[in-house]
Amino acid sequence: MYRTVDNGQLRISNVGLEVTMCGWVHKSRDLGGMTFIDLRDRYGITQLVFNVDINKDLYNLARTVGREYVIQITGQVIARSAINNQMLTGEIEVKVNKLIILNVSKTPPFTITDNTDGGDDLRMKYRYLDLRREKIKSNMVLRSDVSFYTRDYLRSSGFLDIETPMLIKSTPEGARDFIVPSRLNQGEFYALPQSPQTFKQLLMVAGYDKYYQIVKCFRDEDLRADRQPEFTQIDCEMSFVGVEEILNTFEGLIKHIFLHIKKIEIETIPRMTYSHAISNYGSDKPDLRFNMKIKHLNECCQGFGFSVFDNAELIVGLVVTGGCELSRKKIDSLIDWVKTPQIGASGMVYCKFNKGGQYKSSVDKFFNMEQLNNWKIKSGAQEEDMLLILSGEKSKILNAIGSLRIEIANRLNLINNDMFKPVWITDFPLFDVDIETNSLHAMHHPFTAPVQEDMELLESNPKLVRARAYDLAINGVEIGGGSIRIHNSELQNKVFNLLGMSTKEAHEKFGFLMDAFEYGAPPHGGIAFGLDRLCAVLSGSDSIRDFIPFPKNNAGRDVMLNAPSIIDDSQLIELNLKKT
Ligand code: ASP
Image (cartoon, rainbow, N blue to C red; front, side, top):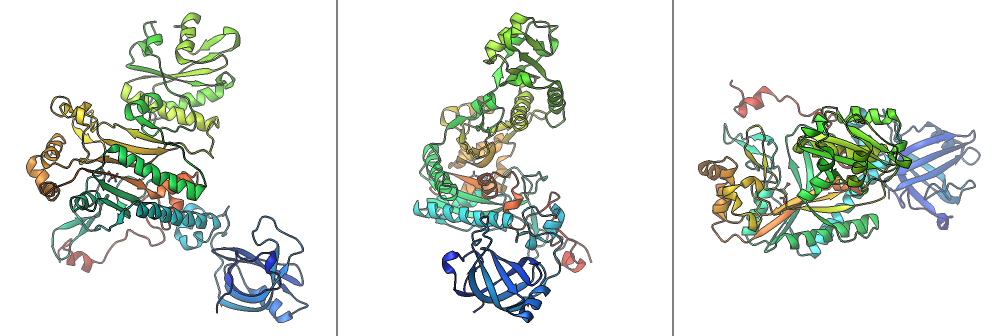
């Protein structure tokens, strides 16, 4: 037998037990006559002790083993004289009487510790070593648990786990497809699924009224810190349901996961319409761990001769509680920040409501004390607070102030990191308007059903049509999204037309779905959650990479495999991608 116990198992009650253990040499230190080895495996670390006076050969052998050697030992559990309260096994150690080196190891290129000295690229190149680190290992355990409790909840709610194909035709989720050339059908290509969207809808037509799958999705997008070209979704679909049933069902899933993973009872998840979220938080995924709502100030700012305000479509502000204390330097740095291209504001006005009515704004020339007092009343600020104001075009400025809200909270430490604030966002617009071309895009995806009362607007003013779509955001991160779907081919065709797709083109691309709608498609809807992001949020981390066993870097590369890579000419020729 290789081992009788693991390295996280032994306690003081096991003293006297004869054990055989395996693992990696985490650390070893020689105190002259005594050698201690920390033996590590997935379950923990156990201290081994070798004493020169008891067995000289064994002691000498123990001194030859290096970091990350794989060893097997047999020995006896004894009580430690110096107890280590930081370790679960800290009250015992194992007095070794047999040591076998199962494999040697080169010196690892970085330390296998939480605060490793390895940089990002090095860690990714040797990901199998990085995965040995406790921090990453516990992320993998968490991920496995989240998957388990997801399956647990969905199975007991009657959902079937059904696989859908990976080599398919394009699914429009708003990104580029990854393309796979077909050897057997020369000149033709498969696409990797951006999501199983159309398949799960076909499963509803087939009568499998509760479907789920924990599934890889592929999107060829420009990468951002929290994006990966392949990622995992908890993908779900239900028949004979409306928005209400979907939100309730999946609120249950979120509660189940939080209860089992974090031991936290999530209260009823609040709901907020998209327009409320944008107007109050400047974001469709508001972080509700702190308040600081956006104040709309056009009324008390315009008509006083300050042309920047007078010409602005929208004037909005944020009240920073106790903000009078902020130094000039800190305010200037915020002003510089709002002017950076990714925020895009032209400037920022501020007003300090100092104690005793000594108000001081950056636009004193244009606004007298009485008008500043109006700002105070309108924004709900108190004495010693500061008001920050942005102005400009509505579509841009709401975004900018939403970002400023988060930036201030981060800079002033207003966020309680132990808090979880989920929120459902509902009533998204059905379409997004491209301002330059005035064309319509699906805000969620083209299969999303319009709100019934807005159906007439599809003809007269499609931009105003609301969708039966919803998102779940937690702590300012979009965790999931979905919609009630169109299940009628005529309406589906009309939406495709509004999206600029002719009926012919719609049939070429999605004829299979519209045909299926002709054979008794039930009303249906669903949702998908990002598993990687959900895990990151549960751990209070903003990097999804640490929760993916083998992630890609920011350039979409797997630096361990060195992929993507060039393929042989013979392969290219076989695929008809190169002439002989
Ligand atoms: N397929 C959608 C997505 O990937 C989710 C859904 O509508 O169920 O975002």
